[in-house]
Image 1 (cartoon, rainbow, N blue to C red):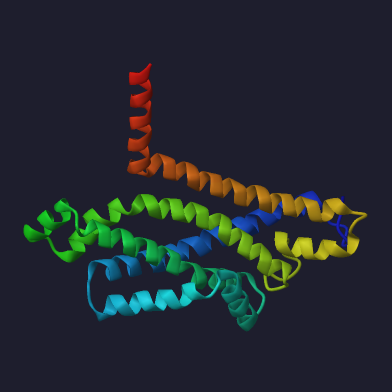
Image 2: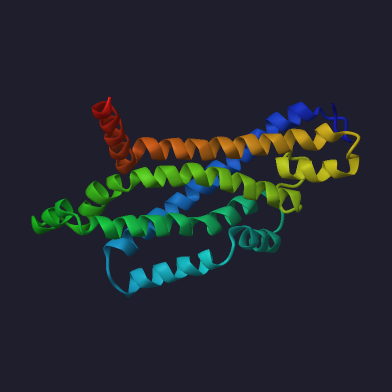
Length: 232
C-alpha cells in the first residue's frame, strides 16, 4: 500500500531500516568510545579521579535512559544528529560500569600483577593485557545495546523527537499511521514488525555471542558433556 502522501510503504520501510541501523551503529559506537576508556581508567587507577568518573556515570544510570533521552532530544530539537547525541550520552555509562567491574577483577589476576612487577607501564598493561580480556563482554553489551538503542530511537520518533519528515523513520511512521487505524492496519503493523524483528535479532545475537565468548559458559558446557559421556 501507500501512505497519505502516495509513497510506497514497503520502500519507505526499507529506507527506514538504513536510518534506524545508522542511528544504532553510531550511537553505540560513540558510547563505546566514551565508556570504555572511562571504565578502563576508573578501574585501573584508584584515585579521586576514578571515584569522580564512576559517580558521574551513576548519576546518568540513576535516570531511566528513555526519560533522559527524551529530555535531551526535546531540548536540542528533532533531528537525526540530535537523536544520535541523546542516545550516545545516555548509553555510555553502561559500558563504563561494565568495563570498570571487569578491570577491577582483572587487577587481582596473577598475570597482571606479574607483568606490573616486571616493570610494564600502566598504559601498556591496559592496552595489551586488560583491554583484550574485557573485549568479550564489551562485544556482547554492544550487540544487546544495539537492540535497546534502536527501540529507544523508535520511541523518540514516535513522540516526534526523531528525524523530521520526510525521513522515513520507523517510530514516526507508526505515529503517522494511527489516524488510519483500523482500516489500514498494515501501515502500522509493517514498521512495528520491523522494530520487533530487529530488536529481537540483536538480542539473540548478543545471547549467542555471550555463549561463544564467555569462557565460564564454555567450561560449564564442556563439563556437562563430559558428565553425560561418563554416565553413558
